[in-house]
Length: 222
Ligand code: G3P
Image (cartoon, rainbow, N blue to C red; front, side):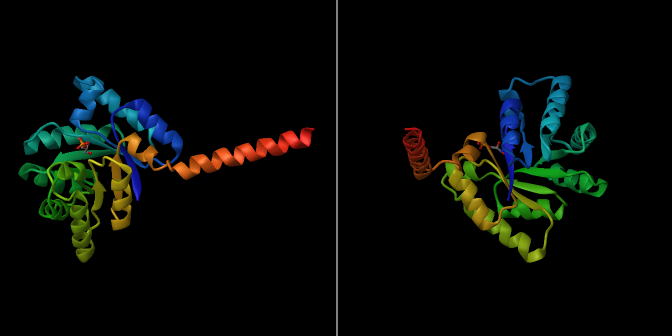
């Protein structure tokens, strides 16, 4: 399963990249706003800075909600760097835009997916990725993980190339469940990725190894 980081924060992206496990980045307008990025030039420069850090795909979302606007914005974004994936919302004009970009060989990520029907439609339109938001479904008492399972079954039934990019990941258990089901990608915050490291027996085991080593060294030095 590919690991994407879901942030526009450059130092977090750099930290994940330095860890050696990062396959890509996803951003959205809220994450860009959180970093205080506004104005076309700043937005463009920020995407370029992200692309300079990471080796894989970088999702950059259009703001337009009409077909012509999405095409114009998407083409501008895609021209910035070959790593850019144009992120398109799951709306009617978005489906048409997915088809347009697919035919032009430009990668897309269809965002704000909350049902298997939406994922199926985006896959039929040629989306490179679909982004089901599992955390936001959990928030309203729907099972986000079950949606990933449903989409996996549908895509496998028909051999769709579209990759499932589990988004709105909030914790390490989400990551593990996605991996068990066979999600192609998960995107989450750095904290959820780092949480996979942790186990109390690892910490106590390492402390004991180091203690025993120090004792042996001290005994040998006598
Ligand atoms: O990738 C989508 C993601 O940014 C949404 O996450 O935590 O705002 O639901 P969240």
